[in-house]
Length: 400
Ligand code: PLP
Image 1 (cartoon, protein in one colour):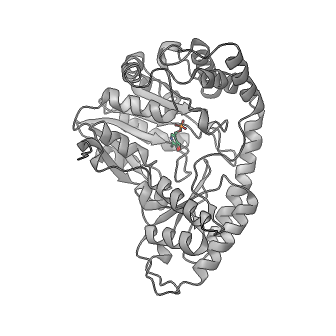
Image 2 (spheres, protein in one colour):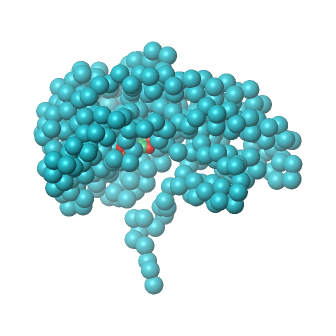
Image 3 (tube, protein in one colour):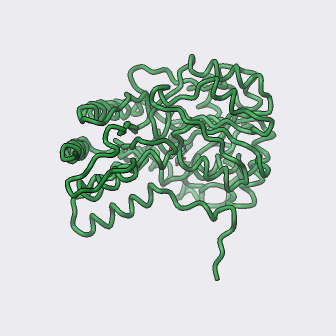
């Protein structure tokens, strides 16, 4: 008989995928389903990037590459860190993996011993805690609700740190909340970290380029040079350049950490795809002007969704600073009775009811470790968003 290993026995494929599968089944049955669940831009990969990949293939760039990134891609990443973040990193401090996801996985596998603790503010990208568990670590989840802007506060961090704490994982702008940390939000946290030298900081900056209303993105390593020796910056091309399928992410951190991460990658997947690496070089080195235009398009959609949500009684949505998600509070609808007499016990029940009756797929806050909320990904057309929000409003209007 099949027996799963203990390290994955309590884990499952992501709830988001499960909701996607149910949405797919409803669609197949002929229902007009709108999916607001996907975490990827609806734009195409820029043409210059696609062309670079084609050129690479034709030039025979189709063999194994250096383990954790070609010299050309590492150079492009160093130039990007200098240009966008004012940071000086050398190639020995850069690692490239199959998506930011693999970079995070490598870092946790390379550093966690059984029982080591990782502090994760909630709501968090579901994968964080699952990866910590696979690496035999202990996720320490800290609730950061809407009242605190979905941001971790210094007192909370201070209280959570123990001698066993190895990492603090931060994600700004955040999936799922869209909240971002400004310089003044980081400063008190950095102060706490400076008093706890055993704690490393993993800064997931994958949504760096998607910020609104003049918000100034900062990376903590640039605010406190002393933090650099225990900070891993995680970033990638998936979200900024609409390259989710190409699977290229990167990390910047101390060479000792990067070398340990290379061991994990060397004994599992080896180099990320050669063609994708060539494409990522073009993404990072080529023109960057379309980033602003795309962000402006996301901003219009954010404004529409936030306003439409706040017009619904029982829903309260904070204006997110970045990424392409809203994370709205639905406390006012929990306990409500649907027309067919069902009681909406929690955010899971609410989202599942929305999917089954209004054919709109969203993701419950429970999937991200914080209830009662639900996440909408607004990286879809205005037309679909208009229809979806109208349906949500209509459905909520039938609740008693
Ligand atoms: N980090 C966050 C917060 C994300 O939301 C995602 C994707 O959804 C990733 C990392 C991973 O991105 P990728 O592996 O495509 O680079």
